[in-house]
Structure formats: structure tokens, C-alpha cells
Length: 567
Image 1 (cartoon, helix red, strand yellow):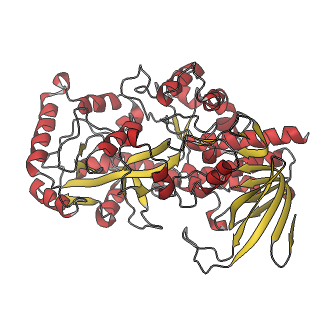
Image 2: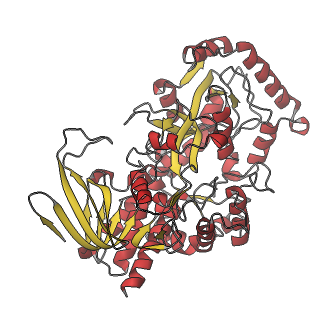
Image 3: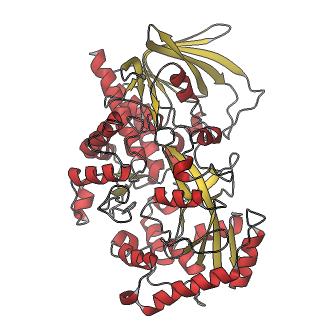
């Protein structure tokens, strides 16, 4: 498959998969299942095989599963599709995003059999309680509707288990003799012949780095690959803040935030999208991004601006840079992540404070990621029980001790002094009187009791606690100024760049399209590179849990399309 000369490493393969993340791995497994010969290349080192999927919490959006039914959840494909189109803000009868909408239909129709059952076949199981995320604010209209029922299935073992299981399946496949995997191969351009994509060129980075950057003095050997079929699974653009800024939707999210954090890998740089765009491929909706408003500085950063995405508390108060409770509609997680980013982006300083006490933090605060959530990653029922009873004490202590965005105080004056010592804008002070005023109003609502609550956040907390998956991790009527629950904690939060929801436009066979809407011969795309299908099948708002599962479905369908052509 490969030959060397003095200048260039040359490969020839019937099928090339660019990118060793979950989409590329799934595509390669499907290709081997169909007896195809495949070369899989990845930009990172061998120990990073699987990419960001290794670090994912592992939640997946599934419809009408046995686990849902065992939880008493009545779901249907039609209900899920109605939720999807409303959250995406698609119009059912317009032609603006035809392939994105077709992919939404395809996912709802096939997710159970082609992702959930497929993973079950490899021994991957899901946590027995389905989580209810992205509920939407009102539940009846476009832009305010989310998941009508719980659909977030958490892989037992997190994204790490899913990724490592699929890697083992790939490397130990009965047709593994037809597989070649090469690491540290960075694709820089594509090779075209008579309008057909026939391969790519790039460089091999000889000295693999443990972080995401390679020295200017690294040894680079050029390579070229000739392939009849190429599947691009190289990720999106959200690891490259220059690209994020270039495509930032300021009308939606406010001005591009100078304090934005990086929550994607720097290798997801969007440069292959630029290459394909210049060659006439259809690249759409790069301003559609799934970011989070609750980013903090990573205590152990691996690259510049490296951030963590925390899962905020429900019982804490979300404040602006001056200590005013954000409103009139208070911010609360679990309903509309897209709106949290919009509100944060339009604040004068583009950052917020999350105010709570230690009791709230222990029970409700969490951090996204497989490596942090050890009980789920290690499949420890004992750990889950301890966490349910005692909360996330280890994670909270780690954040308090090591994260520069987390401050504490035994009294509110002490807390405000610490907040002002860590403020991001020199001209803006956190006001103690603002915080005291809003805490008193909030705690007063709790004291009056559920029957007399008019505060929307407290009403939503009562609603959250009606679902068992949220009841176990949400406190009931917990006041902020509670002498038995201290000290006070404040977390400085800002927008963190995460996922690209636009990209290479594909039809529902995962074939890439040109700017005239025609299929590009030899080119396919899957996963985040394709905006998870059709250059944006989730529209402007994800129902969450759709990313890993769509990577798997995109990749499998691309491979199936190639296999059909080979026959």
C-alpha cells in the first residue's frame, strides 16, 4: 500500500479515511465489515487514537428505546422529529437547508437500529436512567421547544468506553489485514482529476508531541495518497479561535468575545474546509456552533486558552459582572443552552458569575468529561451511590483548590472582595449591595413555599425534581444565604468554544456536494466535518447527545455507500 522514495511517502488505497475520531473509526469498521481495503490516517499520535470522543461524557440522543420504556417514557419518532425541527428552527416547507433537514429525518428514523443496537452488539450498555436535557423553555413553539421527554442515554463507561471498544473492534476485526492505520499524518491539500477527488497530500510529523503543538523544528516528511474514495472525518473548526472569530454570528451571540475559552482540540482547525471551499465544495453554516456559557480556565491546560465546561448548579444564581442577577428571565441550565450563550454574549463584559454555597456545589456542580467523572467512566456502582449521597466533593475541592475562576468566602463581603480581586474588567466592580438584594429576594421566595413561588428559577427547580434523573442531583428549596451550607462560592464563567454544527454539505448517503448541489465524485464526509450531516442537521440548536451518535451514523452510511459502489 505504501512505497518510499527519497522525497515523498506514497500510498495507494481503494478507500481513504481522514481522521481517527469516532466517525472515522465507525466508517473503517463498516468498511471492513463489507470486505473493503482501507487506509485510516490521523493527525495526532497513536496514544490519542479516538480523539475528543475519548473525553466525551458519552451521552447519546436515542428515540423509543427499551431503556426509555423501562423508565415509563412514551416516545415516538414523530414527537422526536417535531422537537428537532422546532429546536433547530427549521421551517418544514422551505428549501433553505434541504440536506440538513433530510439528515434530521434520517437520524430520527435510524438512530435506534443503526447506533443504539449497533453499539449494544459490541457490548456497550447505557445507564438505566435516561437523562432529560435541553427541555426547552416553553415546549410549544419554534425556538422555545426542546426535548418533550428524556432521551439522553449515557454510555456506561462514558465516551472513553465507547471509543476504546470501537478501537478494539477495528484493530481485531476479522478483516484487519485489509486495514492500515497511520498516525501523525497531517493533510494539507487534496488531489483532483477531471472534477473527481483522487487523494490528498500532506506531511508526516516525525516527533509526536504529547500536547497539540508541534515544534517549528520538527522533522516533516511529505506524503501523498491516491484513493478512489475519500471520507473526510477531520473534525470541525472550533479548535481554531481564528476560525471561530471569522465565522462568529455577532447578531445572534453578540460581539466576538475576547475572553473566549477553547474547549475543542486545536487540531479541529477548519483548514480542510477552507481547502475544499476553494475547490468548489459546498461548505455551509460555519456560524452555527454549539458553544457553552459555563466555561472556566482549565487548572491543567494542555494548550493556550484551554477551558473546562462545567455543568452549572440549578440552585445557584447567575449574576452579571456587577453582581446583578441576570433577568428578568433568570438563567438556569438544562433548558436552552443556546439561549445561555446568547445572553452571555450580549452582556457588556461577556462573562458571568455563578453564585452558590458549598452545599449546593457538592450536590449539583459537575464538570463535563469522561476523565473527570470517574464513577461513570470506571463503571462503579459504588461510586455512583456515593456521589448520589455525598455529591461531587472531589470535583468541587479540585475546582476550589486549582481553578483560578473559582473563589470562596465565609461571608458575602469576603466573597465579593475575592470576586473583585478576580474580575476581568478593571472598570467594573461587583457590588455587594446588588448581591445582597438579589439573594434576599430569592431566599424570600423559597421561605414563602412552593404554593406562593413566582420566581421562574424556583418553579423550574420544582419541575426538574419531578424527574428521577434530576431529583437525585437537585436540592429542594435550598437558600443561598444558609448558615449551615457555607462557605459561599462564586464561579466566573464565560463562553467556551466546543462544536461546529455546520461544515461540508452532504446528502443522506454521506456524499459531499459541490456549490451547485451536485455530488462530488470520490468525496464523502462524516461527523463534525460534515456538520454531523448535511452541513447542519441540528440547525442552530442541538437537543444534546446528538454528536457522538451522528458521528457513528454518518461514518457508517459513508462506508455503506462506498461498499455499494464497489459491488
